[in-house]
Length: 474
Image (cartoon, rainbow, N blue to C red):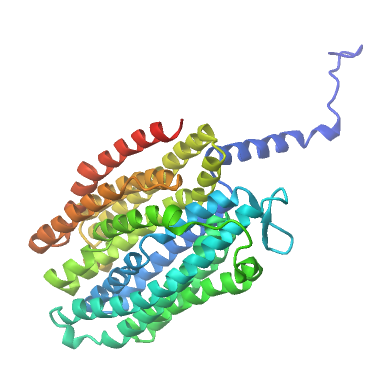
């Protein structure tokens, strides 16, 4: 509206911040739609740091250790992953069960868990009961892991051609012990994640990634060879202990005494899901960790080094995608406990789309990098797999990310409907990796992984997902 002189009235100066506030609101809305919150920011930050660490390792490891040592370096990690079998899938059980109890709990000003309404004593008592039982379980699992890892590693590495010229014995004995100690710390971290302390845990781990990298790189540059592996593992364990004993030291006070009320029935509530997850974990080991030992034994450490380095890069991309999926598990559990299924599905679909897109984009970047390195005859090209094998592994990584999203969703219901599928697909992939990997090397192992996941694993799991969702959400 104009004044008598024909001038438009001017806006008051106080209104100028409004556009900025509008932009901030739009950014927040976009971040919410993309499922980005503090936990995702810290988890993604940790994964991004790991990716930078991977780039640094990509430049340092091939230049300062031999091709043979590179094969042992990556296979160390694959064999040490046997610990996932020793704990019998209990990590996922802890996260999911704790998240259902945490729906009625919170942290008080002292950093101790307490009831939201002040009268949720049963939920706290059940959480304490769960914690005390899993701590005892992992004490046994850690001792068993130490023995099994030591023996299996000794068999694998001593039977490799040329192993008599590689000083692997001392580093392997130390890495076996440290891995077992890390297994003992795992239930404490899992309990924190299940109690929706994901943001704080990953915030600390953002510091862990560069510290571990510096220790490993320092060991390699100092000429310590395979000793860099246990050095890095020791630093990772020290960071986990800092989270548990310093950052969350008050969280554990209720766990020092037996539960005062309701308890968690292990045989009725924990074991039914645990043994199924244990079988699934066996299949998972065949799917994700068998390639390096097979290639090492049948094709030698040089080819195993190429396979290990390429798999590590793709795993870093998948880990970045899991910054969205892994951080959503406690929230999925809370929504299920409150029967808010519509919100659950909305969060799931968003998480799946965003995380899978991240893995796809990262995989395409890797393929471009491999193509450029081969065109430029860069020295790293000879330490990695070729373009075709890498493309197969990237595609398998994208399909695997979709599968992981569905498995997180299903297991958040405190159930494990994927046991048979995981075991069958894992055994199928294990047989194909051994068969085709033995004959065609890393390319055969890569194709085996893609065939198992693309033609059998993902279609089967998707059918289970639709059926379970329809049956459970009534």
